[in-house]
Amino acid sequence: MNKIRIKVVICQMKKEQNLWGGRFTGKTDVKFVEFNRSFGFDFRLFAADVRGSAAHCEGLRKAEVLTGQEAKQIQNGLQKLLKQSAHDKDFFADSTAEDVHSFIEAQLVKIVGDVGRKLHTGRSRNDQVATALRIWLREAIDEMTIDLQNVQKSLIDLAENYRTAILPGYTHLQRAQPILLAHWCLAYFEMLKRDAARLFEVRGRVNVLPLGAAALAGTSYPIDREAVARDLDFEAIAENSLDAVSDRDFAAEFVHAASLIMTHLSRLAEDIILYATTEFGFFELSDAVATGSSLMPQKKNPDSMELVRGKSGRVFGHLMGLLTMLKGLPMAYNKDMQEDKEAVFDACDTTRDCLQITATVLRNLRVREERMQNAAIEGYLNATELADYLSKKDIPFRSAHEIAGKIVLRAIETRVELNDLGLSEMQKYSPKIEADIYDALSLQQTLKTKNVIGGTAPEQVEKALQKAKLYLTKK
Ligand code: ARG
Image 1 (tube, protein in one colour):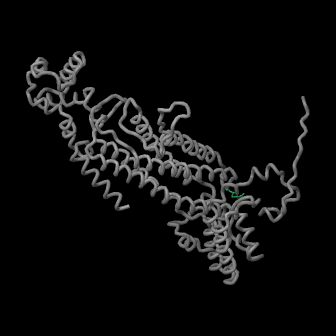
Image 2 (tube, rainbow, N blue to C red):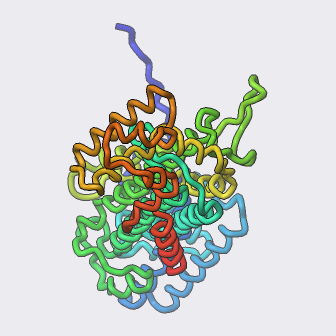
Image 3 (cartoon, rainbow, N blue to C red):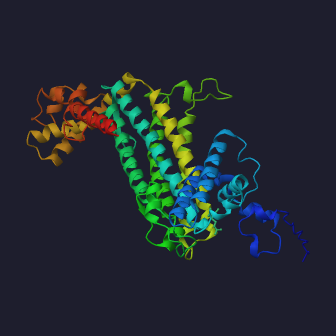
């Protein structure tokens, strides 16, 4: 066996750069330092962590662990850091900090001196990071909800701009029955409505304060956790310190909600891609959200929608990653959990991007009404009407279905639509068929008969649109 010479690279890090150097005598491996670091991504928790730290500082002051003077110095330092982060674009650039928490502490000590080293009294990075992530996430949920509502608004606008447009409805991707385009828009509206409700519910479970749990057992200082929670706008405090620092179910729930949003966007994208093909020709994407081919001059590719469809996969992947990361963790905190952040951040960024792009696609979509309507007329989409017509004349529906099927077969053989068959021709199949059959088979009538709540009759769709608009104004 070949002997492999392993060169151990020794870390030259200065002691103050990590928060835990005291009991160590050896140096940390350089590769491991990088491997262990999360600052490259968790710097995004900066503002949330500063806010959590300020509330903790106030908690310590009230508990008389810090003097008023000390607390004030720390608070001023934290505020300075916030300002600096907003103005200095290189603020995070050159830091070798292990994570955002050590970064903030090091920067604070730089500004306020040794008193900054008192801030970590009575807390651990374990309750600190859980708090920061929850603060960050509830804000992200609020922003995502606005993006979601914008897609809902663009669906309603599309529906209203093409109020009377009719297209074939499909099952098994076979022409089934005519529907209004507005009805199709409202179907996606409903899905997104549930997604918004899901996000709202998740937000409730995110909005619980872990601070005070400290490392795992609870803090040893008399901090009023309820007051800290109020200060940070948390609705409740975590009831068990072990649970508070060691679960990330709230993160998984969020990514699950994002995954369902992506599922819905992906279905919408698929419909749009399909309807924008030459074969369907119902929609045309705006130049603003399509691309051309480097080879084929005629091409207009729906890349925007394809990417939305494709990106759903990575959001689902993050959900699987989180669940797998969590499932075998022994109580309580384990470093595995540092992996939660990239999953949450990327799921959030990806879903928000997709929502925004989808809204733009919808807002600029050209609908080819005539082509759509012609497709709704061809292909016996009114065959069910024929069966219903007969059943209303007291023929049991099963028999009516059979008769209608035979008439459809006849029409297929003679290559005409049902409305083109002569009355006497149809009467051969059932004497109950009369001249009013043509009215019953008309496109408008086919829609009109679906007059139940949730149906595609114009009257119902109009009501549904008004209801949808009311929902949006109440948001
Ligand atoms: N960067 C760490 C994380 O994201 C912070 C918590 C570290 N805690 C610890 N005991 N090492 O989870």
